[in-house]
Image (cartoon, rainbow, N blue to C red):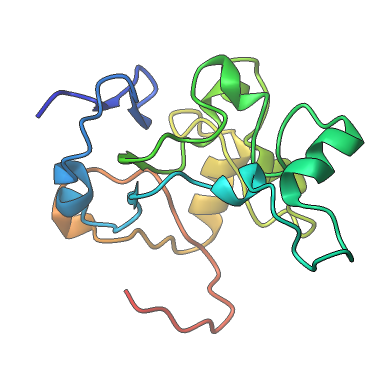
Length: 165
């Protein structure tokens, strides 16, 4: 109801955490089930000062202090430019397709990290782009096109994987 969940100029569904009131209406309305809710403070164990094994290990908080880490392993300092490094409690979240990386002309991190190059991102309006060529070559599938949201994620070549959708 606040407009926290919105489409940007590229058509990406993003969220403004400053406007999110945690009502979960966007989560309940999402036909894809990809929006989650942080009921508690995410990754709070890193602030715990109790040893995991008494006199045998250090606490998660002490580990951070001893290693000089500026962030927990769950924080994404790069993401912190335009979005919280760790989402606050009582807010929703979803994949942003690394919009902060797209702004710099980079791929989403999952695209670069995928060892089999199974993830591709590109300009659907450019018939010469790799993504357009793959869609032309293979029969693409989209999740719930009947929902009328105009999904822009295509799945090709299922390799016999059974899906729930």
